[in-house]
Image (cartoon, rainbow, N blue to C red; front, side):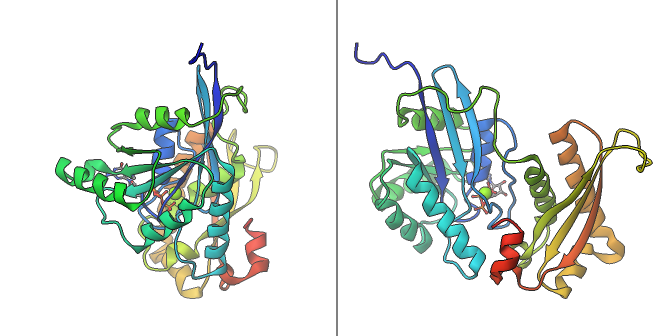
Length: 302
Ligand SMILES: Nc1nc2c(ncn2[C@@H]2O[C@H](COP(=O)(O)OP(=O)(O)OP(=O)(O)O)[C@@H](O)[C@H]2O)c(=O)[nH]1
Ligand SMILES: [Mg+2]
């Protein structure tokens, strides 16, 4: 009896430069939005776990922040978090987008990964954005970049080969029983998921260094009761932090228009997550240079 494997379980993580589609792939695999996504780099700031349950396996995916040359203390801490994560997993998925040439950032990550204990699967993301020929060329270039256990092209948005990624990652897991109860999709706390949905809404449409300067902290969640006028509506108060006064104005917008849009987009996402009505109260505050300040970073959970 050679292939009588009953059940496999273990951890995979996705690494790659910022904005290559790691979180989108994780959400496509999990089938639920567990990580926020945006067209801005450095969207993910935490190691987020998504759990994929199947009869033959339980695959736990850890989505990590994009690896990049750090410019701030936050940047350094994010890179450390990624390295700690890839030292602990059973298999690593290295994401490289099909629509961008392999560059120094990818080569730097490939060198880091050469030291990893776990097998590395090279994942060519966003194949829907380029022609078949280009995908072929890119696969060859990726092959020459390092030693990979497998190379798999994928499109999370068009659902091309997402199930193949699932199979390939599972094939690298050790045999073992499930590690999380069935039905469990993430171990992110609810308030963190809510804060992330607000940050996701605030990220779209802002430019330059502002995406990096945004942070969201949930102050309070008040159940409907005597003191609230709204029935059955959960009231959520959150602070949106920026680093400078000038950024505050941008986030709020003319006459508060932008903040209002951010609030209604975030509210929709939160209502979908919680399955109930919420009232969202956002306050924009300045926390001077928080990305470089150890004390403030601690307060924001980094
Ligand atoms: N066309 C296309 N776009 C994609 C695909 N996957 C991701 N994207 C887009 O690429 C952008 C970045 O996606 P994310 O999943 O947030 O990227 P990330 O690697 O998690 O980024 P960081 O968390 O900042 O490191 C978003 O605008 C996505 O919609 C894909 O398969 N096809
Ligand atoms: Mg991400």
